[in-house]
Image (cartoon, rainbow, N blue to C red):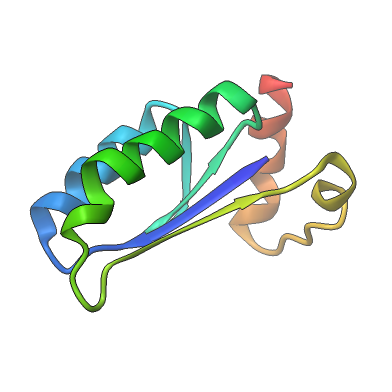
Length: 93
């Protein structure tokens, strides 16, 4: 599982990045996406950030990518509606 968290000062850039991530996974919080783990997908996201976004980062802009291993994924604890989303994720695997 890959977790991508982001924050862009510019609303338009934030919206574009959100739509980009939506093509790979699903939103679990306003600016946090959960994405099926794949080296190809991870490489695509890293390239997108490096080539399209990083050069224009302002003071508050950030992207955090967590690449969780299979063992780490089993340690993720969910509560509330996030607990129900696990069944949707398992469909991908």
